[in-house]
Length: 370
Length: 99
Image (cartoon, rainbow over all chains, first blue to last red; front, side, top):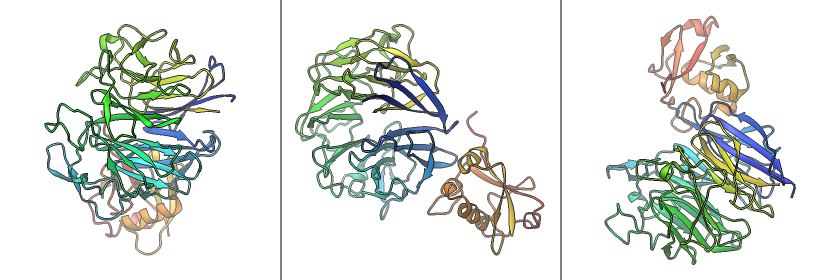
């Protein structure tokens, strides 16, 4: 391994930050797609020079880009996301039926093995797949047409499918999460889906055992333990050890159990990270202190990581796709803020440096270990 | 025939062209046939001016000719003669929204 490439999507373009293994000196390129909102970009694990990017705006709709040279140059690829078959209705905020309507791609998840295959999680919630490098997209409609689909309701950001996890040991198993429907799992490559929300408790749902309706913010897993998932929910940090069949809470001593991203250490499957945020309407760190919290035993016991992070007058948010890790020997942790800062730690979170201060609001951060 | 078109800046960047382009239109010159021609010549603009399936103009895009807003004129109505003769461009405008 020779270094890292950090892919940063912002409200006004994409930026690419590169460094060697020491991760002390950084080069910044961008803005790519200047002025345009880049929801997410992510590289192919099978070919790191291939990067997919999602650009969306209210003016000109969804635009998809692909690079085959590590982000030096880009070409436009297919942007037609047509739901497969009849588009029924989901619930609107007020509980009335609302037709499914494509708005944007929130998350791109390239295949672990094939650079030409990539999944896209979209709003209104559905999962699409391309097997030709993003030129054409087909819906895996078994998810949207699940029997509970007509009861799904949008979260504050819309009815978005924002998390996609590919099981590295079973190519037929995929996990997704939707705000505010919950988490789902397929064991047949996307044909059929099962809600996996048992054990989640959401104050705003009168039915304590509701199968769907949970506002899941992010889910993650470690490739060596793909039956163990961690979840940052609207409130509560959760874990499951049986692929989502049953969840339990591991919020423990966090100062707020609300937040957006959650990541797992590259080499320690029980070491997890969150960034507590105040809610409901505040959406900034408690006490104006930007603290990443780390648990080294899979949750419940958390320590604040503050060295190098602002500990006063900090009122930024960290969005759900704006935190990532590298896989170097000393694991790096990265996150971006709505204030335009990108922070990184090259020592598993013990100390932090600011990679860049003044980008547009950061929507997503993904890291490629080269 | 050659029809002059003016694109908004973001679509110029996407198509890697300047502000003023020319497209070849066969048959009647209408909003639909001009946008068809744009999408043929610049496939990367498909879906950005109008919806892929319904062919409806995107809500925050407007069409103008000679300072007249034609956004709500039927898609298949003939465009003004000055566009057909190449004297005036067909303007595609992104809405000024956002403060």
